[in-house]
Image 1 (cartoon, rainbow, N blue to C red):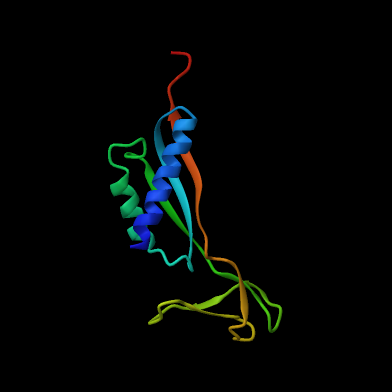
Image 2 (cartoon, one colour; image 1 turned 120 degrees about the vertical axis):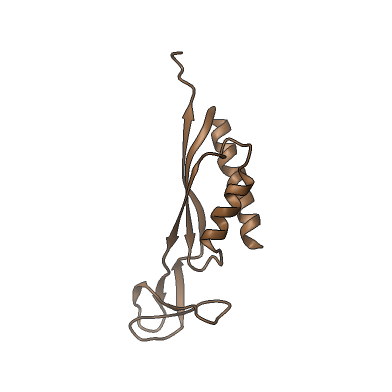
Amino acid sequence: MHELSMADAIVKTAIDVAEKNDAQEITEVTIEVGRLAMLNPEQLKFMIEVLSEDTLLEKAEVIVNEIPIEIKCRSCDFEGLAVSDDSDHYVPIVTCPECEERNVEIIKGRECNVKTIKIEKEDEDA
């Protein structure tokens, strides 16, 4: 379960950032997951919600955005969004949309990042 270890790291990161900023609670976490990160967004979100029980993150909205695959083709120098065939393959097959070659450099699409963490702090005037 690759999603479990990644969810655990995300939960720990969000809580650490919130605590360092004296948060009362986390209201929203936005995560970016590349199509080649080999993570199921629904499973990742579910695992985060399970691991968040009884923490600052428990009531937060978890948003998972998918990052498309961007390439630079070594054959024709095309740069942009790739064509991906991920049906019946363990790893998606990535090809250039211009020349249909597989000799490509992946520029984006492998990452998994915590993009934003929204927190609520205690009113300092109270």
